[in-house]
Amino acid sequence: MKIHEYQAKEFFARYGIPVPSGAPAFSVEEGLAAADDLGHYPVVLKAQIHAGGRGKGGGVQLAHSRDEVQSIASGMLGMNLVTHQTGEKGQPVKRLLVEQGLDIEQELYLSLIPDRSAGKIAIVASDAGGVDIEEVARQSPERIVTVHVDPLLGMYPHHCRRIAFGLDIAPEARKGLMALLGRAYRLFADYDCSLVEINPLVVTADKQVIALDAKMSFDDNGLVRHQDLAQYRDPDEEDPLERQASEYGLNYIKMEGNVGNMVNGAGLAMATMDLIKQAGAEPANFLDVGGGANAEMVENGFRILLSDDNVRVVLINIFGGILRCDVLARGVVQAAEQVGVEVPIVVRMEGTNVDEGRRILAESGLDLHTAGSLREAAERIAAIAGKA
Image (cartoon, rainbow, N blue to C red; front, side, top):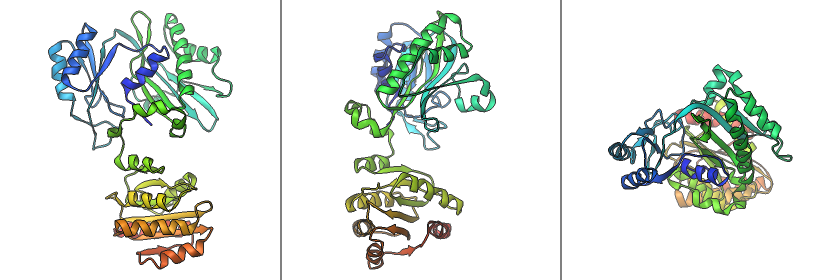
């Protein structure tokens, strides 16, 4: 789950992480009022969407007067902001953040992310802030400092010192940076975050370290422990199909291909998509109905999958354990009867009650193609998708 910059800065302020003064605005009038409350210029107007690269797309602009605030807010609210993270379709801007301008001396980069290969939290920092960290990693990897923290032990001062002394910053700013690092780690751990990123983290002319930007996302698996986070969700920023799937307890991610996938288990889903691509086709989605799915969940998942106009063929790949093959088959048939199926379906299933599941599908009257192995299913899908 992602949240907006102004919402992330609410969390930052709560944890004592310095942020610029500012306020969100949902209209031009609110933008003017926010600028008036700040009391001096320049002020910065930032489009609030769940994507990076806003500045390059015109989503971050400086205003030196009240008239400029009005002009910029009028143009920015309602605009379709296109960045390298939104894709060509862009994202409509429905809210702004108006905040004070700062006298910036240096821009840094800071993020906290889980490093699953190490089983630790990675703190990544660089003195090349304000630009894409991927570009820095490619061109100047020596400018990136990475420190791993064991989540069972927590952060210690030596972690902070390694980051602070690993960056080319003024000695007067190091104390503020180390304090900020500790607070950012506590925030990350307390809220089961999957990302806390500050780009740029700035050092001002008076050597204050301030989070000029803020990006946070939360692990969906931990949301049950944080009921208060529901109020920060912005449905307008989520793909409609992904939002609908989450309401049914399904894991769905939309992609750009034309092969719809239904599987049970994230690992199986990844393997299925890999084989589809190796066979020369492109997946249209990641849809995991889960190991404990029932017929209703399968029906809902199938309905969501078919509602994607890009889907030209469907691959159902199920290993029946907790989710029995006959339960899956009934869910697929129920969904087909309710929604109607106009695309071919390739089915590969193995496991509990597989013969009964195959019988149900064979007698359903659906346009089905069965496959004995996953590779055979992927090759058949690719052949059909190539003609679609």
